[in-house]
Image 1 (tube, rainbow, N blue to C red):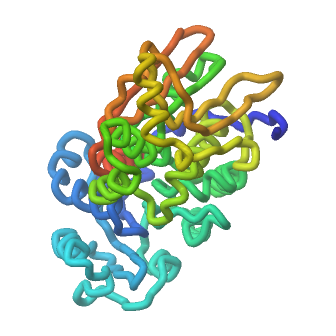
Image 2: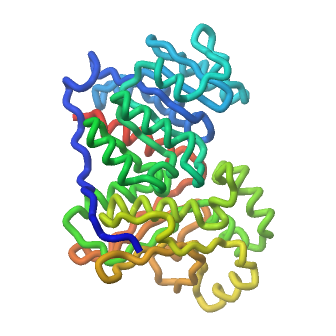
Image 3: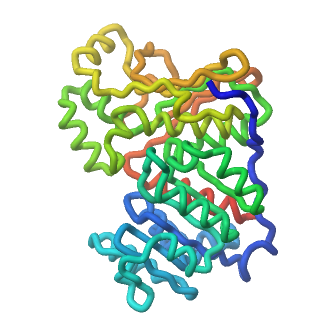
Amino acid sequence: MASDSRPSTSPPAPLSASERGAGGEVRVAIIGLGNVGRRVLRILHDKRTFFRDRHGLEFLVTGAADSKGAAWTPDGLDLKRLIGLKEMKDTAASCLGAGHRGASGLEMLRNAGADVLVEASPVNLKDGEPGMSHVRQALEQGMHVVTANKAPLALAFPEIMALARERGRRVLFSATVGGGLPAVNIGVRDLCHARVERLEGVVNLTSHFILTHMGRGYTYQEALTLARKAGHAEADLTLDVDGWDAANKLVILANSVLGFPARLTDVRVAGIRGINRTMLAHAREHGNVILPLAVAEKWNDGYRLSVQPTEVDGDHPLASLTGGQMGIVYYTDTNGVVTAIVDEIDPMPTAGAVVRDLINLYRE
């Protein structure tokens, strides 16, 4: 178990008007244009008038990169055109006059002239790459970072936050835990005065979706196919069904909310592959339900962390979750039991959380 050095978890103050561009313009670079990244572009495009009128912010996407190339221009990319390209399985490099086939995310960052990086590349638990290098380069260049990619923070939370402080930049990451679920924001902001004795979360939608549908009579493979069609599954499926995606998120919660400098090696992890329909039916016969539960419980001067399928009774705050929901429960010393639940039938709420971080970073 890691030692309890308790890094600062105070929420960042929003930027002043002088730290933003003229007219509230914010230049955004985005890396990763998959299920989440495409929806971020859609929100920025469709709600641009709302963001200007409500928050005084104009988001200008000056760079975008995917696995096949990149595009950048100081005048801002045509988001409608870029969204259309991605919906046709094309690449950002096909943007006329701005595309660069084969260009990397790092090359795009060097040329986009952005104020903030949105990092939504695939999760890689081995070394965090390429997301780790994207985050570090953005901070080194003086950019703020909003990330939906869990791996860099799960593998190097203290180091990344130290670099951000050194550079006077901010890293926001509420989309990394439970998608649109405000798990990080509740813990860091709303429970800043409380001691969390225990937290429990269903924070991996794919594994919960699969168990829920198996409980309705689907086979594991049928339930997995449905999860993939809904856009829930990670590119690396083992992250979901073997518990590592939830473990990533638990490490982020431990560092940011609990002030406990945990790493993945501190988490006891078990996936859902060993759960069958008979086990689910047996639990249901007793009024219980099996959840893929992430848990942090107070232990000595720190916390014990685990992710595993867990049978809970019908009165548990998360027992009634549907297959399209995630939730978190904080057990605290001053605020009692605080529960939050999100419906996430597709990745749109996760993309919304990314945009939420962008707005919270820059609004007064």
